[in-house]
Image (cartoon, rainbow, N blue to C red; front, side):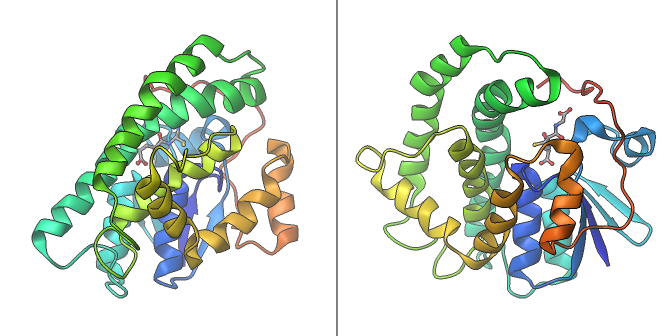
Length: 247
Ligand SMILES: N[C@@H](CCC(=O)N[C@@H](CS)C(=O)NCC(=O)O)C(=O)O
C-alpha cells in the first residue's frame, strides 16, 4: 500500500492525493505538518518537506517526482497528455504552479496569515500580504488567464497535471479569503472552478474542510474519526522545529 506523508492542508500533498484519487489507487496518509516531523522524518525527507511517498522500500520526495512515479506505476487514466508538446506544456504548468504559485499563495499569503500564527505563535507580515495581493497575485492570474482553455480542462476533455497543479493552490488561497475575481479573469476562474469541481478534488475537499479549524495535535484523531485513510504509524512529534530550506 502506498503511504503519503504530509498534511491534507498542503497544496503539494493535495496534488499527489488528487493523482492517486484520479487513478483510484489505494493509499494511506500520515497527515503531518512538516515542522512537526521527528528525526526519522529528517531521514525520509532530506529537505524536511512534505509530501513524501513510501511504497515498500521506495521513498520519494517532491510532489512532481511523486506524481510522475504514480503515472508510471498506474498509467490509466493518463494524467500527462499523450502529445509530447502538450505533455511538455503540462509539465511547465506544473512547474509554474509549484514554484511561482507556491511562493505567492503559500509563502507570502498562507504562511503569513495561517501558518505563522498557528504553528509559531507569530504575527504575519501584513505589509507583505497587501503587496502580494496588489502585485504578485494579479500577475499570476494574468498568466493563468492567458493559458486558460475556452472551456473544460487545459489539454482536452480529461483532467491532467496541468489542471491539477495550479488548482491545488486555490484551496489554500480560499482559506485565507482569496477568490479569483471572475469579472477580471473569467477564463482562469472557470478553468480552476471546473478543476476543483472534479471528483478527486471534491473527495479531498470534504476531508480538508472537516479539519481546517482543528488544532494540529488533534487532526490525526479527527481524520480517523472521519474515516479518512490514516496510517497506523506517524512521523509526527510534539514540538515544531524550523524548516531547513529558505522559502
Ligand atoms: N517542491 C516541493 C515543495 C514542497 C513544500 O514546499 N512543501 C511544504 C508544505 S506545503 C513544506 O514541506 N514546507 C516545510 C519547509 O519548507 O520547511 C514539492 O513539490 O513537493
